Image (cartoon, rainbow, N blue to C red):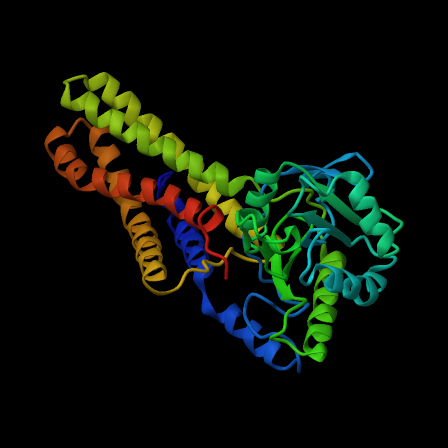
Amino acid sequence: MELVGTSFLGSLLRALTLACCAVSPVEAAFAVGAMASCPGVSQGIASPPADSEMRFTSVPSFSFTERSGKAVSLDDLLGAPWIAIPFYARCMGPCPSMTGDLRAQVYPLLEGSDVRMVSFSVDPAFDTPLVLNEWAARFTVTDDQWLFLTGDNEVMGDFVREGLKVALARSDDPNLEPGLAITHATRLPVIDGEGRIAGWYECAGDDFSREELTANMALMAERALALSSSSGPQGSPSVLPAVNAILNGLAGILLVLGLIAIKNGHKERHATLMRSAFLVSAAFLASYIYYHTAVLPLQGGPTPFNGTGAIKVAYLVMLGTHVLLAAINLPMVLRTLLLAHREDWDRHRWWARITFPIWLYVSVTGVLVYFVLYHWNPTP
């Protein structure tokens, strides 16, 4: 992950410092403090105030069927914020009352804005478009600012649990009424115009008073509206984190192939592979610096890691060693390549024995950091 020349060292160190902000507690502390100033609002970092720059995980791509019969995908929602609402029509729990509260207290606040409400049926086998139309009519929803989606049962379940990070469970007990066989959390996510979850807000439940739920729903609406006014021109989340991970992974593969080549006595192949690894790492460095200095500030800051306890300690150790060794390895790689260029083979081999494992470690952990933050990040 390192390596274009000594002139980049200062930029690299600045960019690596920015990477550490991905787990900075400062913004989290600010969010908690701001929430504490709102009486009646459910406390927690996961429910940030309206003007917070905090973002969590990105919502994965999906395509479901709307009550109108048309397909609706994530691409159709990008560019403006939306509120996701898991529900099902046969629910004998909070779904009817929560939907009624959202219709009365949240929907009117969004009138005239580009914020949408999107209900996802967690009982899609029963909730056909006809049933969804009856459900919408029950709450006098007549326009497409509030969408009602259905689809495949398993796909929808995975999307709600893994994509929206909302708890969902199904019971196979044949003695249960259909309206009690499915349970789901009522903590609704707000998604920004780039497809990233910007917070979860509790909108039902016996553990909250009517005043608390009303305050939570008002804050949720304010959060969505604030995201609407601050939505940038981007239509989708940046692909650069994935590109950077691919470049890191490719560099790691080239390094291993280069080691195999020299072990088998193929010096020319080894030289070609190591030069290729250098060029790929140089491309990574340029992309990494651009993303952290030009793109990330416009997207609300770095993605935080939400794990706790031993998991967070392990992540911080990996991130810390990744950043530190990346900075250390830069001059070492340049030195090793320079000695090869001068055909000073004795000193080249000595430096390579130290440089190679560090370079490989940095490349591999660069890929792991990406997957931890964007695919394996726990729900806050």
